[in-house]
Length: 180
Image (cartoon, rainbow, N blue to C red; front, side, top):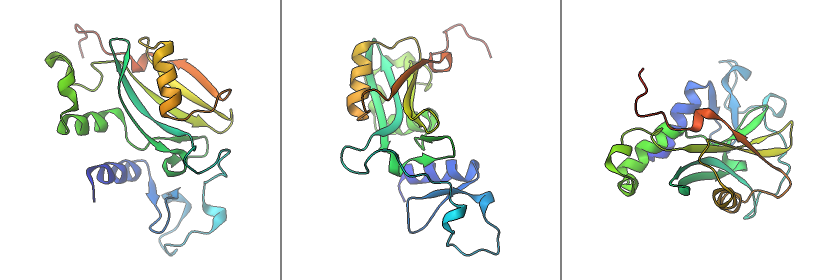
């Protein structure tokens, strides 16, 4: 099992979800009882029919970081392979876990040494799909521009007319003098 799979399974377990053994379907654990077998009936599953094709043009959800006005790193998965809830489709791995993997792969060496320690030392963002709004939302901090937006749209294969930008202060880096 890969490090990614370990992190995904840990996140699913902590959020009370489980992955079906024969499918990439993810369902809430609380929709089953201990007496039930591994097979889950369709009425218990939370999946919805995806409103886009599941092929090489399938849109993706994921996370990203920016640095000096440019896209620094991104990770994504096709919507059909991502975590699906009743309200959204989201990438299974958070920024914290992904930062750890980036460090292990040596990707953080492209940053100044003082910015390598914490995942929130540079601006970051997330792309999710919201069922009720039938659109993808790019959540990001203040360090976001048209060039980054265009890259995200291309890399994540986001359909025109179904994209919304949302500034979220959560995705800004903490100031150097921030005290916990």
